[in-house]
Image (cartoon, rainbow, N blue to C red):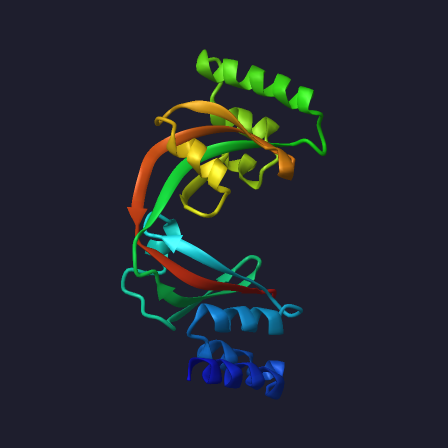
Length: 210
C-alpha cells in the first residue's frame, strides 16, 4: 500500500503543470515525497530537507513543538518566498553537539602552510592573545567564518564519524586540530558545550525567488 501511494504521488508530478505547485506542496507528507518534489521543481526553486532541533532558533520561530506532520508556514524574505513544510518529528531524541570551527582547504594551501597557520592560531588562543571567533572571521574558509565559526547545535551524522568522535572525546573549551585528508579539509575546533539529546523535526525548506 505504501509503495502504491508513492507511485501515485510520483505519477501526479507528470500530470500537473507548475501552476499546480501549491497543490503539490500541500500533498507532501513524508521525506520521500519531499525528495520527489525537489527533483520535479529543481529548475524553478531552491530547496532542501533540513533537520531542526529544539535548540535551533527556527524551532521556536516555527512553533515546531506544536507542529504536526504536513503543517506549512510561508514567510517573505529579501531573497524570496520561503516555505517550511513539516515532514515529521523523529521518534527518538537525537544527540547533538555544539562546536565552533575554522576550516582550511589543502587544495588552496599546502599542508605545511595550513599547519603553520594552525600552530599560530592555537598558540594565540591558548595564550589568550586572540579570540577564536575573530581568527575564524579572518582565516576560515567555512561559510560560518563571517559569524565567528559557530555551527550551532548540530545533529550527529552531519559530519564524519571520525570528526564527531574527536569532538566527543574533548572537554568543553578545548581547542584542537583535526584533519579530513581525503576531503582535503583541515580544522581548528573548539567544543563549546557538552552534548545534548534534543528533539528533532525533519522540515522541507523551499525558497522561490521574487
